[in-house]
Image (cartoon, rainbow, N blue to C red; front, top):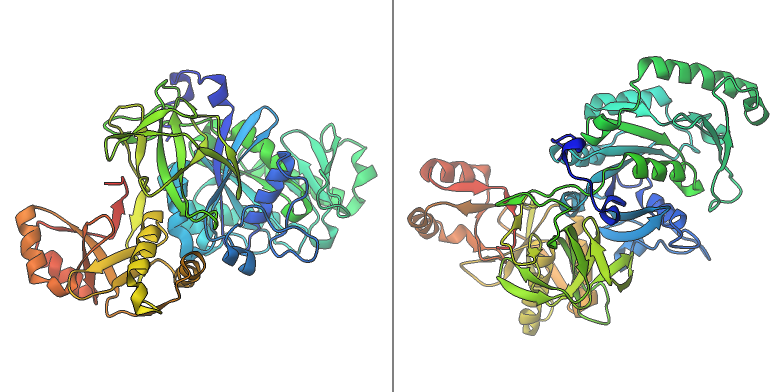
Length: 537
């Protein structure tokens, strides 16, 4: 993403240069949603942070708006939030940590310029973190790391850093160093600014106290840190400075090095330092890959692409909101943009900016911003909007589902309603919906089993339609492409296995790996693919 050195790129207009668009990735339960809340708190966007498992008066988190998210304390849909932090404008996308929703997360990562990786101080790098990290690596995204939950029993700091270096093959440089851990956790020493950051356990929503120190030999340190912890801090920092690389902004920008901050999101500790890190080391809006040419953020014509569609965010209005990442230019409300897939102009009269489930009309947006465009199904994931030029943003993936089930409406008279609901979820990217060529009914494909529960609960809540999912004879699906005559021969010979997805593309439903191997052997001119690029065609 940052192949060209920064010096070769023109300076961005100030409004664009101050934007930082990033996603937060982590394993479930590492504290990602709590960290998101604290970002909003520091950005002045909310007065009191919510808690994921709120009790009594403690508020619900702002970024979880689906009923199921509130009930279970997990995030299942990516939500976007924009807020100011000092002179910077942060566009933050909170992603689902649960692996059953990883596809939504993969697509979200196409719309950001950097990622914040949250890891649990006791557990280190977990499986889902590793998967998401691979996607960031494919996109060369700069990564900043936050090691959370240091106020609980955590692992040795060097051990955590070694594990990140080994498992993720990336250089790690400490931006702060923890003082004690668990009950003895006092705070951190800020290595970038030679400051002592002390945690206030009494007030979770209070910004930590900062004390300016002249290096680790400053006698004032002893006023705040017990001697045994101070000796340990000096020894560890000396070792870290000898053994670990120094922070190199260019390596961070190229995705080859990650600075790590330590803290406790629930105690609001270490969060502000991380935000300063995003402001200083996070990239400004980057060029987007597109056909037939790349889109640069400083271009004057406006362009953007849809990376997510969310239906029924407002239960009172059957609305669908397309989340659009602005790729270039200065957008103003009321502008007419060309919907490249249909070649039709669209007047964008009521675009919204998000503060989690709250939204306000967006009078303007710049490259790097994420806006919501309410629509009635015209916009799909992968669509590009421009001021007339036929550009198509590339690299937004759709994955073959790993679980397939049949679906029936509880009331057979409502089959038509079910079809409408399923098509809506398919366009939202929440599930794959296949219509077999033979027989009635639909087959729904998802990446993880929890998605079936979420779909059933949403269809009932949003459409008043109880449904049941049933076992299907099919185990996997592949998109089929190739020469027309060969496609027809294949479809005619495999009628029992052929379906079409919601875009009308041919899908081969299979029971065994043997089916796929046989098809590839007998039809060498055809391609059977487990992913399909989404560009709304």
